[in-house]
Image (cartoon, rainbow over all chains, first blue to last red; front, side):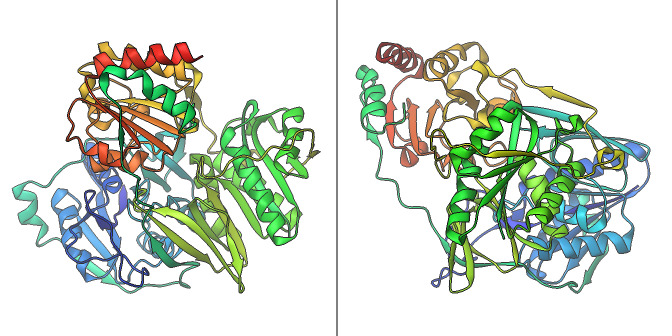
Length: 246
Length: 325
């Protein structure tokens, strides 16, 4: 079974968000980038399934410029076998989906996994776009993934419950917890990652269908109004008469 | 040129988030000088669909195929694509839900449309450029996105706009068939398992949420959260550490890697307010924080706060709500 795991390179979860002076781009200065936390579920689950099957490969794919390579190497250290980087800044979800679909087609991958969404753009779009481009099923967001031969059983989260879905490979799934416990690299993994193959390819396709005109930060909160614990009941009156939310 | 609105139904009723989507769609239609048609998915009754007139919908298309009761990605996508063709819709509006995202992303490729998810405001359409504001960076920022395609798909975040309500207006319900066959149902769910909802309120749809963190000290104390939630008609939620140690089920976890909620009222009890938790709640309209540590970072993001012991404060709040009602 050939697994393709798509990872994005995102600002660390604790990053204070700031933009360039024209508000057109995220300000990367001094920001630590990590593997998108949702993608870690996809990566670890692919490695677990490969191990359980006793054969197969896990390839990581990133659409990004050369500065994403440290996190690609980290994915290799966690246990992926090889990596592909599409050498382009990710313009929008459609652009990224075209790159993934092209790589998936070329490499005839059986299972294409990614995180539910990236924590920077929060698109939750790429999974369906890739599935549609390849004409294969998508399951999103998936909380559980088991494989038996080429048949996968997934639990898909719906508002207020879950669906049990069965699909045959090839398929796309976007992953979220509690799918697995994401792994961290060990020393042996870090050593072997250095020599694992990382192929760089150029972007294909027709470009983006959306663009960001401007970013903005949310308006600042007024500041907290504290109510003494002894008269906690007053809070309820404020919520009704002042905030008007109950 | 009409606007097509996708409304999700469940147990005969139109979901609250879809009423918002219907209002949003009819306002966009007004802006563009056209009408809004809805296509309904899930289990609906004709009477409830006709009531979408109150949100400004003029016509509702409904395929009564029984297998559409549960979400089936291929079938829903085909059904909505057929409705788009029938109505020659240039703008398609759906909820930013798991269904909306699954269908919307496939549709965008099939219809060669530009897609914006997590939309929080009505679009601006001036100078030939169609721009919409969406949430980004896990609620820490917004982006104005330009949709360059001839067709546009917008997935609207819950609780971003208020559902309009014009009593007495009805929409015309028209039966509609997309000619679905067995091949469109190969990815139908084998089984659907619904959760036990505390008080019957779905967390992602809730107007009010009462949430507990590690400060609750153990699952045996959760009745304090549940009592207040019940009195307020709120859903219950928890922080990641709480679901990680199985005090509460995963589907109650709000935060960066859990559910994102945007209720009118979010009450956090014994949650310190790590930045990853804030990412899941920071678009709530009013945030109340109860914590015994006055230095808890959550107070910085709160509108109201009580520095005190949750075991002492929560019963007082529940009592006060009961007295008020």
